[in-house]
Image (cartoon, rainbow, N blue to C red; front, side):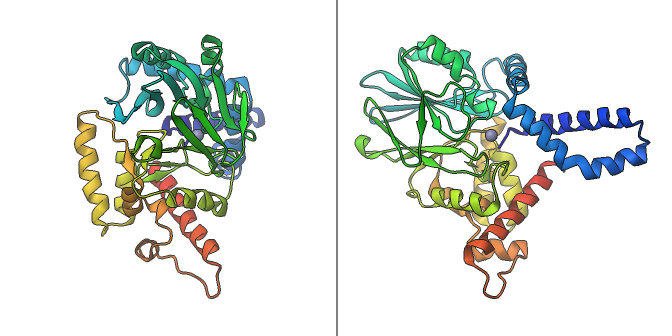
Length: 353
Ligand SMILES: [Zn+2]
């Protein structure tokens, strides 16, 4: 997802464009309301295009970074590293709710950064850990994920910047295709194309077998703990195909998402599936963590399948709770895409409540 803050900013930019339009047309408030209803979507598209395709997006990102550093001098959440047999995973809380990650091969002291959009925070972590940055893996082009690529590449000249060949990733040196692998020291990642949030969105799966531990998926804005990114550049059937890629990962795979949205997402899941015990158990745990400002990742794919409504479109319980029924002869994928559309619509409404 574009962060909730970023989503609101895009909505504000849309409103500003509308205001300018009304002023230009000297429109009355009734006319302005009618204009609003008709232009809301196109204006959002314009704001989104300005954010993703022009310097304005980067300027906005830098402003957000400055604001977040003032509001959260030591990060929005308290996080601890996870160490698994020679691999150290360090979440780096940045902006108001984003996570970047450093993955360190402790034997070679080589590091990989995932979505390092605040170059200063990443540089500090790299220096504290005494490791060198070999690669940046970018899940997608949104500035809150890719905004630090160029600055870090300037500091760490040997560092390669990986990302989809179709997503306009800043500073890209190594465009990736679906299922390509990346090796850094003893770390082996596979890039999987997961379009929907953006057309070139990718997730990265760290192979656990060389370390005799679980695999890890760095999911960017495809999925979060109990949530899923907004569908900006794709359709529901396309997003469903991408979500099924996550559903097919091993149950023990650890999920490292791009945002700290767990509490809000679980409150939404509870409103959609009020009889799902797994939702409420996880929600209790998350509320206790968030009271202490503790981070909530990682979860496992097994857990996500139990409470994340976006991974449960095949479940009769969810379909019934939503009141969505399969039409006679309706293609199963098309039906599940309708279920996904309904969940997504309700979540967007839930965010605006
Ligand atoms: Zn995004």
